[in-house]
Image (tube, rainbow, N blue to C red; front, side, top):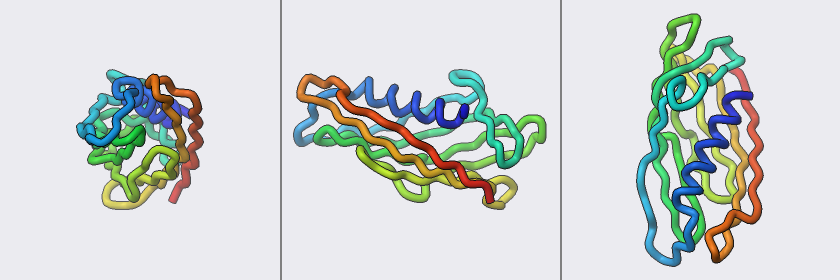
Length: 138
């Protein structure tokens, strides 16, 4: 599923940039990607649209843990031309279950639950990682 691949890519990309042994000080920031330009369009099977646009994720790294949430996402569906928004229901953390939702024209069309775990050793190397996604149409 393209959605899964995009989310996994973003998590790995963010993790790779900050795969350091952070002891006490939090590293905070935002990561923004352009879906359909930087990445292939997201296919949303609930509506049959391919989504392109911008998604902004806030992240915090502290003591080898990562917390992230979708701050905002605005994408356009093709072929429908409808505008979709994405937002976090609950933020995710290293070894987390995160949930975010998709809205179109003010209506909930999908929720996406993500199970993710990553272990980084003292050398900053990822030693364990898994990712699982459950998309539910509404």
